[in-house]
Length: 454
Image (cartoon, rainbow, N blue to C red; front, side, top):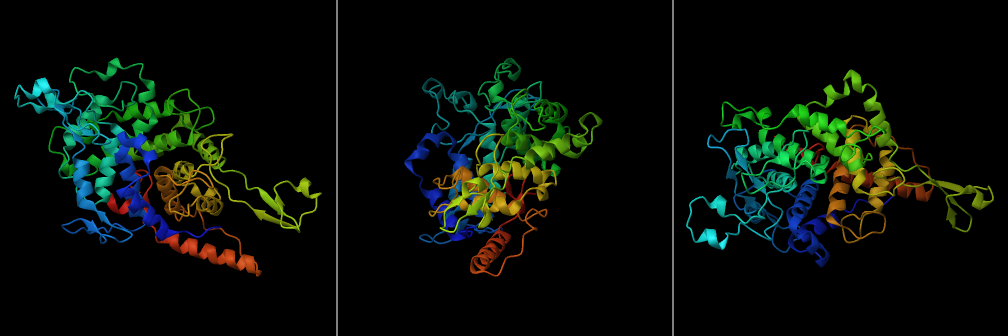
């Protein structure tokens, strides 16, 4: 097992906030999600204090951790799109379109030349036709702002929530992109199934949850939080994605997948209907099927047979049936059957088990060991052992590691022997246990530190 390299990870995420390798240029339209991965990871590592000062600065320029939170907050607010009012009454029933955030300032709120000359006060009508808000970018914007200590007081909550309502289709799913025109009707987009899967269902419900978690913030006395989305149809759409194995596919009829399963279960959790759904008579046994599917996504613990000459194999027959020594190998998670391990599924599937209060059923220490083996010497985590680090897999590896200290996931461990290797292994485990124990607690369903949620 490898030690947990906290300082290297801090350097990796803080450096990535300032500059990235050129390969990330292809993800420029989603730059906000990259900032989200860095900020959330630094928050998990305890580098962003809860109490913020006026300057919103963490650390000193030139140190390993230097985050000018004020600059990041202003940059995020600059990515907000201008909503267009759909109805004169401004009610909840589709009152606005286009409220939310885009992923980067690659385009910006560009004024059309012809409209700019008209000097019309309705600036929303001058917006560039491709200046869309995106439901996933709105989610990461809100999470990142909260992690940076912002109180969201500058957010136009009604515009975003009414935009969400307009994006929900009759079958309960959500369209990812918000239009710029009030003439758009989401009901016309019946063929756009790939843009209406459980990923955007989760993002929409998470946005709704964050903005409505405090009912006192609702200015409209005639509007309740449940008026903005149809909870029943959303629940039915999620259930329609259930595969024969018990997992959830991205859309109805698709193969069960670890990522979409988490999105569906976390959505039910945030909607407050998870326990009710699992107790329905027509779904009797589904929780057990789903739990079994998740647990079986952990690779089997293979035995490494070590010969006298130091060579090793995982097949006893290659050693003429004579076993000198057996060592358990780390067991990672796969996203679906017959695939290879991937560190991000440690969170997707481990998080699903956490929400089902069943994470104690997996081999937590074996999964910890696999994730730690994917640490990079530069900091961060790779997708698999030996891979270069990337921000997505690094964040979800961090998220899983902090989850692993809860719900008895890693309580069971064997006592070490007295030989030198076993003593060293015990010392490494102690370091891992202590380091992970200091990580900030995660709100699993929202994917951000629990200390930031209200």
